[in-house]
Length: 79
Image (tube, rainbow, N blue to C red; front, side, top):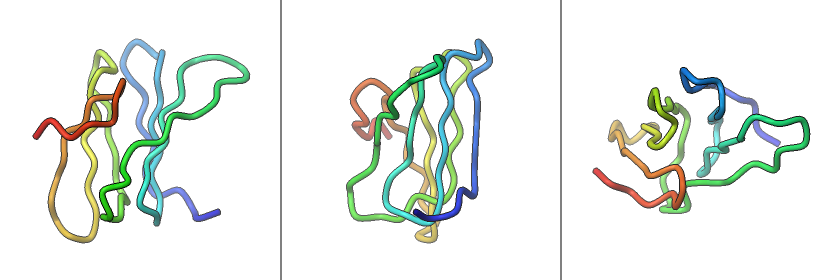
């Protein structure tokens, strides 16, 4: 397991995203036994992540210097 370098919580408190030194970010829904959803998998390291106010999008970034906006439901890159 890699260390976490970034954590962000949606303003409504219903979702949290965490990133570290790996190629995935994890999104949790509020709840005691929530299973994380993994987003990424496009071959780029994800070391930073921030979640939108409404929890529907995540901005991810890494050593390549490129920010990617992803849909939290699908993990698909939007921009």
